[in-house]
Structures are given as structure tokens and as C-alpha cells.
Amino acid sequence: MGSHVETDTKGRKTAINACLEPCAIERGMRIIGGKWTGSIIFHLKDGPVRFNDLARMLGGASKKMIDQRLKELEARQMVVRKVINDRPVAVTYELTDFGRSALKILDDLRVWSDEHDIK
Amino acid sequence: MGSHVETDTKGRKTAINACLEPCAIERGMRIIGGKWTGSIIFHLKDGPVRFNDLARMLGGASKKMIDQRLKELEARQMVVRKVINDRPVAVTYELTDFGRSALKILDDLRVWSDEHDIK
DNA sequence: TCAATTAGTATACTTTTGGTAACCTACAAA
DNA sequence: TTTGTAGGTTACCAAAAGTATACTAATTGA
Image (cartoon, each protein chain N blue to C red):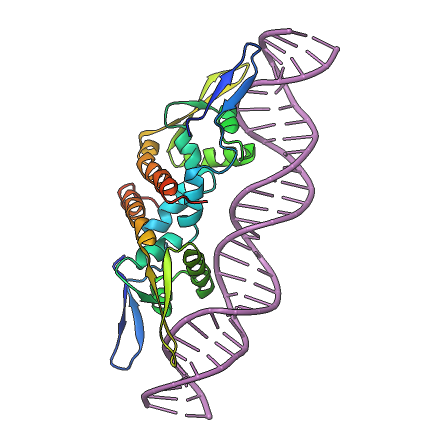
């Protein structure tokens, strides 16, 4: 992302290294920046959590949301879904190593939000 | 966010410390996680940039988007708008100390995206 | 004169997202 | 039998987000 703007002899300007495609920051944001995504990852940090327990912890999010986000995270291999019991169905969600690799950023963000009193 | 779920003697479950309101991670995300917001902040890291130069660097974003995001950031005191010239109009945008305080998180995110080859 | 620059605004439009609520199978307790 | 648990799915609607295009006014350079 060393982009800057250059002016030629005729005064015309052109961007050098423009972000025509979403650059790394954008791409990253689209993964951990979805609504509730960061919170979900963070709530899994201490180990496997069952679906409904997660839903209870994230009181503000609907099951649909949580389900959607978990599927995205599973597709990205950040989370693993494990059926721990048939009859009655029991499922847990757990972070992969890749999933855990995002925790530092999320925790820094949490600290930053707290420090700067973001409402 | 030390939320967890407890089961009472009758098997009923209740979430302790549930995130009824968006917790710190959510709140932070809503500020630096908007589309293009992170990229804009990052492009301002080396000093003041003019509006159209920013638009050129962020080739994928429309002026309306950039304008909107800059206004949000200005309202949050993360960016300062400075008119450096009337006739012809010239304006620059610059990070405040608060704005700069987000750079570390954004750079970590950039590195993380690159390392994990996020598409 | 024509084209391009400055920093936006205005308008219209499409797409995506988010949220509610109902419904599903299967099991268990009162 | 009714209620509750589990882990979702489905349909629908409203609102937000994003895109596209045109337009402003003043200035400069060819």
C-alpha cells in the first residue's frame, strides 16, 4: 500500500499503486469485521461452545445471524463444528489455529475501544 | 466479556454476563470496520492528503463513500479537515492523535491478512 | 476554446444486510 | 399433554449500504 499521486509535466495526476482491488486491510475487515463476527470468535477463545450457549451469550444477535457467521467462519477454516452427540443433538464450535490467530487483533481492538471510550 | 452459561438445579440455562449491548469489539468494529474506513485511515498515515488524491488512491471507492467515511471520521475526531486554499478550493485531511492510535491495529490486520493469504 | 483540475452535492437506483417470527425433528421432564 | 431443551431452516420485510451519473463554480494550461 505505498500508494501516492504523481503529477506529470502537463499537470495531469495519476495514482501510483492505487487500491483498485480491496487491499489487505479491506480484505481482512471483511472477514473479522462482519456484524457479530469478532464477538463470536472472541467468545470461543476459551474452548468449544455450544450453539445455543453462544446465542445466549450474544444476547443481541439472532440465531440466524450467529448461524450465518459460524458458517462463514467454518468455510474459512477459522472455526470447526463438531457433533458431540446424536439424539439429543449436541454440537460445539471451536476455534482452529487460524481462528485463534485473529484473537490478538480482536483483543487489541477491545482494549482500544475501552481506552478511548468508544460508544 | 467474561460471559458464560449457568444451569440451575432444574436444568434451566441462563447466560451470565451476556452481551445484550454490542460489546467493546463490536463497538470498535463499527468505527474502523466500515467499508473503506480502515483503508482511508491507513492512507493518511504519512501526513495530510487531499480529497481527490485519496479518491485516486482508493480506486475502488466512490467519492460519495469517501466523503461519507471522512465525515464520520471527522465527527469522531479521528481526522481533521483543513481548507488550505480558497479559489481554487483545496482541502486536506489529516489524522489526529486519536486517529493515529488506530494505526497499529490496522497494520496488524494488514499483516495478518497478508500472512494468511486472505482473498 | 476545450479540457482538466479543485471538492464536493444531488439524484436515482440496486444490492446487501439485518431482524422477526414461525416452523422443523427429536428428546426429556413435569 | 404441555412445556422445555437442542440446533437449526425458512420466508418475509425494512433499512442500510453502495453504485452510477451528472452537476456545480472557479481556475489553469494548451
